[in-house]
Length: 249
Ligand SMILES: [Zn+2]
Image (cartoon, rainbow, N blue to C red):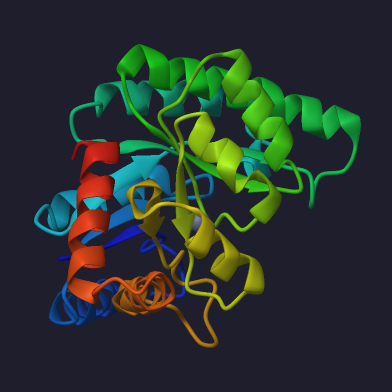
């Protein structure tokens, strides 16, 4: 079984329920039988829970407040979302995507607000015994510093392609999630990191020449198989094992 460890199936690019249904069908027909579905923006967490409840055989929810929303989420919205996470603990596969994004948010004020929220979300994950899925851009070292400081090791670095830090992710107990986009650094990471520390994702609908779909995750598995010169079957088995061990769901 192939697994897409990160996709956004409530995104508006999937225009209707029927459309999402078809996207899930494409995936299942391509052998992608499990998809970890993330909201990624305010207002999508409930939708993710609903969608995953409709397709419990194939979808698993991962919800949380993204660093992109850290500076506009109200205290009330945050409390509501934390309650939603607690209330749905049993259904949830993880908290995400959370983290730091210093690419879009450059002032120290904005970055501090992100860090405060990130730390609160890590605490929640600790309390509820859930793994976290990290979004990080131009802030990867800082993210790893925070995780080291609070001693949290159950994390996946989503769409991670910073080759200088890939060994540090593994050292801290984390797992690297590789996307569908072509990149030299991604190839380097595929070579450097043992299969047992890798998972694959599409980040659908993003990161593809047209609208991305979970069915495309197979391309990442194929790339790993080619680069590591290990059969696709073995890679498929090992990575499914990694994902299921990580999320435990
Ligand atoms: Zn994402």
